[in-house]
Length: 120
Image 1 (cartoon, helix red, strand yellow):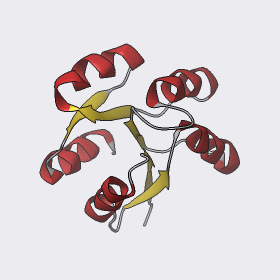
Image 2 (cartoon, rainbow, N blue to C red):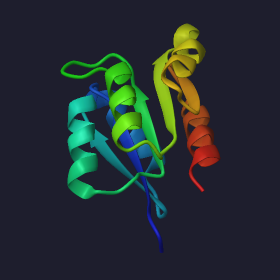
Image 3 (cartoon, helix red, strand yellow):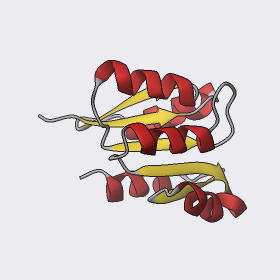
Image 4 (cartoon, rainbow, N blue to C red):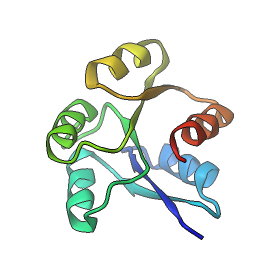
């Protein structure tokens, strides 16, 4: 069976654990990085484009804005879904050229549906 990889860029281990629990299954593998710099390193190391990037916007070391800009310039092909405070999520998604957004706090059913919509 072919595994779809979702790259989760999130500094909060509790949120990362929840996302991994909800999404991990027979056909999805969630790779977790704690900031944008770590995510770029993961992409360089593994040399693959994930099926989807779930991107927190506020992180130490390299935030989601800087990651999205660098990612699009260096790699650019995977869809990005931002995960940030609910009321600002649509605007942030437009600012970074993301294909979607999930407002925090999020409902796990919404998370699962957004991922299903983007991972084929």
